[in-house]
Amino acid sequence: RFRWERVEQARNFANKVWNASRFALMNLEGVTAADIDLTGKLGTADRWILHRLNETVRDVNRLIDSYEFGETGRLLYNFIWDDLCDWYIEFSKLSLYGTDAAAKKQTQSVLAYVLDQTQRLIHPFMPFISEEIWQHLPHVGETITLAAWPTENAAFEAPDAVREMELLMEAIRSVRNIRAEVNVPMSKKVELLIKPASEETQDILRKNEEYLKRFCNTSM
Image 1 (cartoon, rainbow, N blue to C red):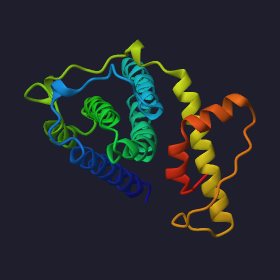
Image 2 (image 1 turned 90 degrees about the horizontal axis):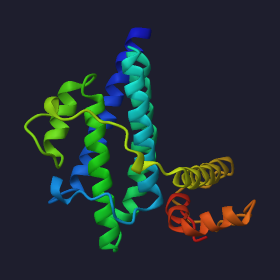
Image 3 (image 1 turned 120 degrees about the vertical axis):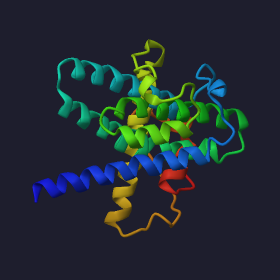
Image 4 (image 1 turned 120 degrees about the horizontal axis):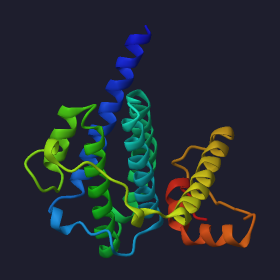
């Protein structure tokens, strides 16, 4: 039974990676490797996912050097399933489906870059899926097998974006939990009243108000 559960878990993870990549590719039509630009004005979620990618790259390289392959797999699983799929891709929809062309272009660049680096990281564990996905992403080169291995990039460090995202995620989880407790479906729009613990918290929530409206389904 334990072995079957592990196989099922691996299958579900592969499906998660595949479906996330399909979503990205649908929103990267026409984007080439030359179009990827991470130097512009990035949103909170964009800076956060680049920071988390950077942390993951650093930890993966450390674990591989120590031959801790099981822990490496767990780390990649958590980053891809939780940070990339469950949070960033959902947050990216605000820009991808919005009317701000510049914000959309920046999010496309971040999404393409993070997926590219992610496929390289999981290639030793999932060579066929990662190769197939990588071939359809904006890239340079014939095969992911010969692509450069990801390395840490100090320019992606953004602890302030991490603090903002942690606050937003906590607020979103709290609202969803309260909805569940009182049997209010997510499809029903509600008024949201928040009492910030500090002026800094208030500023962060106001700065990212659109995320709260979208993921709490509220008029604020």
